[in-house]
Image (cartoon, rainbow, N blue to C red; front, side, top):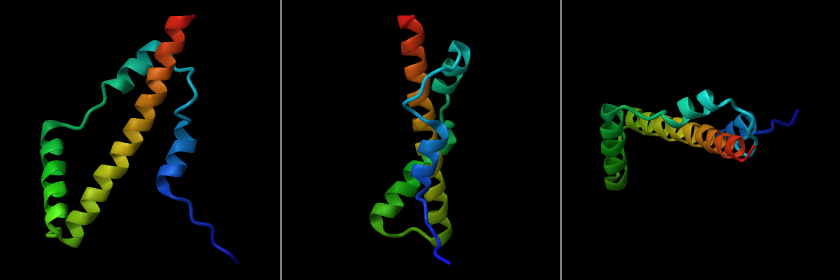
Length: 91
């Protein structure tokens, strides 16, 4: 039996459909306001620095990958939210 591997960003993109609109204004605005906390942003910066230095532990690498995955998900959601707002303003 052949196993098909799907990259997570591709799966997220299909799930979120960032090129589709249709969200109500309040939902779109709430999604656009999503941000990592200051503490999380500082941690992600530290992990990125350690990664550039090549000094990440396996646990830190996994944590960094989680930041990247969730960051990509938020980016996709916000893309759809901006498109929804743009289309609602044009209507």
